[in-house]
Image 1: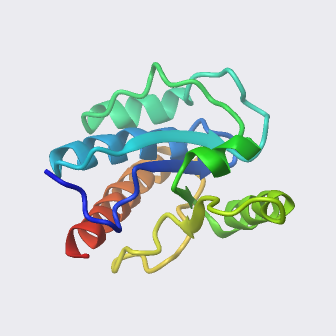
Image 2: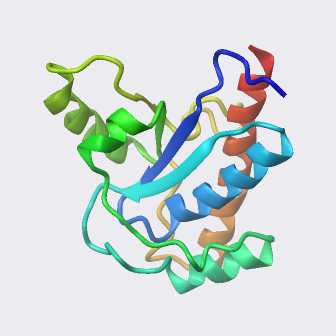
Length: 165
C-alpha cells in the first residue's frame, strides 16, 4: 500500500521520563500502524534524562502486556537534537513536554529547515481533543489503564486522519 503524502515516514512519541506513557505509545502506535498497512518508523524518548538506560516502569509493562503490547525490551532514552532531523513528526504526551520540545527545536531551528513537526499526542483525537495524557507514575492501576485507553484512542485518531487525506 502506498502511503499518502500526509502520512509521516517516522514518528517519535515523547513524555517526561520515557518509562510509562511514551514507551506504551510507541508499541501501541507501531501495532496500529502495521494493522492499517502503514510503514512508519516509530520510537519513543523522554525530555528528561532521569531514566536513561532503564526499562519501562514495571506497572506500565504489566498493563501493556494485559492489552497485548510487549514493551519490556524497550530502553529509555532522552530526546536529542538529531531527533528533530530524523523524525517527521514528534508527538508529546502533554503540554509541558510539548513546550520543552518546542524550546529544543527553537534552539536549532535558526540554522536548519525541515525539522520535525511538533504536536500533542491527542491533537487529532475527537474523544480527548488535545488534552494531556496524564502521567500515571505516581498513580494507581486505574491511572495506568486510563493511559492505555487514551493512547489507543489517540493513536487510532492519527492513523485515521492520515487515511483520510
